[in-house]
Image 1: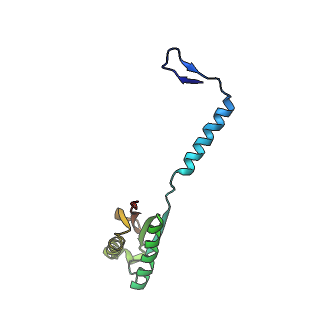
Image 2: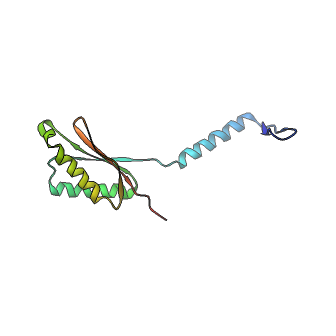
Image 3: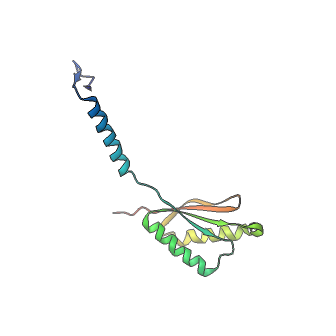
Length: 127
């Protein structure tokens, strides 16, 4: 195995190739385990979600962001409720405003078919 090819003469070392491959795999596995895993939690609303249900789901959203998970909040429109797109958007923007201290909006409300989705990422805690 070449250690420093630019030296004059080049420096080489004799190694067991299987041991070398094993150590490479071990390093990669260790790097993979140290990588942060991003968890995405979902919260579903309806366009006519009542105040109590909203506050209950708000507490869950707060807890998810505190734990460091991303939040995917969406309003699902069934049947003719698609007429109330504004209500759904207002609901999601209100949620974003109330979670402002623990998370920041990654993607504003966007209508995709029958659901309007919004992503909120947790704020990084300063040490």
